[in-house]
Amino acid sequence: GTKGSVVLVENRIRKLVINGETLIDRQSGPVNGAASNPMAFACDLHMVQLMNFIDAIYGDGELLITAAEGAKAVALIEDIYQFGLQRR
Image 1 (cartoon, rainbow, N blue to C red):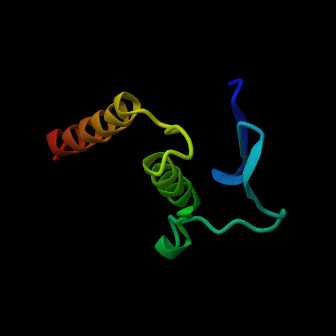
Image 2: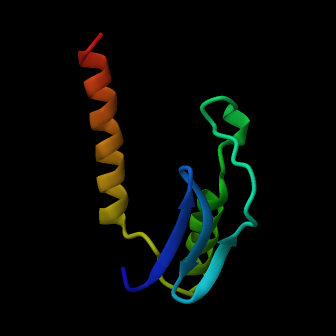
């Protein structure tokens, strides 16, 4: 895209830049996956979305994700659940 970039290492975000602002910047090192340790699941992006939402409420910016894009993500997750239920 033209508004940002992300660096992934073994399915984990190491660096996230949106509109020129670095939101996540981690040093290189071992990556522990959430598959073996659910507590290792990163919540950084949830925090970024929450901060963005609060900023938008106070008029300090626009939402990074529109309602329409959010609805697409929810629909995808619902489809995955339905697929799993059908395979039982």
